[in-house]
Each structure stands twice: as C-alpha cells, then as structure tokens.
Image (cartoon, rainbow, N blue to C red; front, side, top):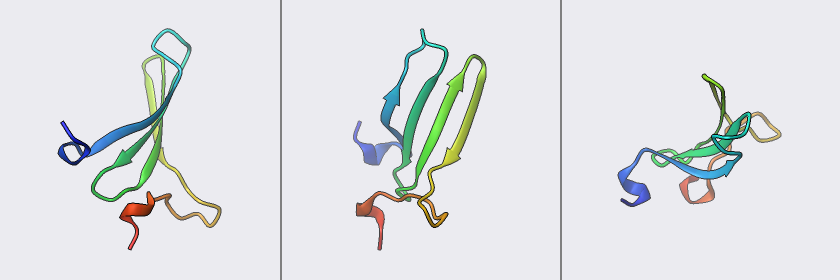
Length: 64
C-alpha cells in the first residue's frame, strides 16, 4: 500500500507501547499538513505542527 492509498501516514515515531507515552508525527497525504499525535495510557492528543508564524507546517512537495 503506497502513501497515496492512505489519508494519514506516520512519518516519525518516538517511544513504544511499553513506555509511558508514544509520540508520532503524522502527515495528511491530501494536504501535506503535519500533526503531532501523543498517546498516553488511554488518552490521545492531536494538534497541527506550526511554524514560527503560526502557520501549519506543510511538506514541501505539497506547497504551491
């Protein structure tokens, strides 16, 4: 399955199911926007990654 077949793709992962938390950076393959996802116990938090100007970080190949 290629990245074009899935909407969201994990591009970075830190931690494991055996640690206290797992941090991932996921990318929306339609828009290129990157998100930080944190899993801790039964809780999950997702937020877009922002640059210094407060704009969402978008992978270069998706920018116009």
